[in-house]
Image (tube, rainbow, N blue to C red; front, side, top):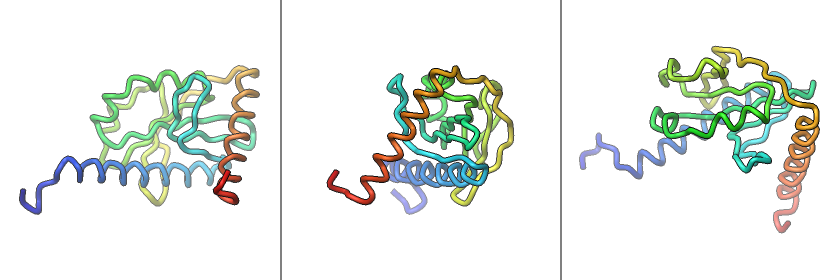
Length: 154
């Protein structure tokens, strides 16, 4: 294999690094808008949101990060996130073909430094009882993560 070729292992490493960079930019962007954010957040339906943000006004956004067309096309579970947020976004790197992203979601373009919203997500609203349960789940997850930082033995 020549130096110019990439092996499947390198592709996996590149995709992983790309996902980390894209996620970091999304988180920075959401924080700049007044959101507290968590990554890899487990929802009550056992799905895992790449990024969830809780705004100071109580609004929840979920951002699903996709760094390749294959990753996007292979994901059929994203509609299951809609019941757990006020707005659902996809975040992609700058070279991603954004015409693939469904119109019923928002679109964020992101790199490791920051992000920009290219298309607003429709506000679907979140039922009050689900908002309360999600807020408690978010708070408990954040507290557990914080505690693991200050006491890794827990």
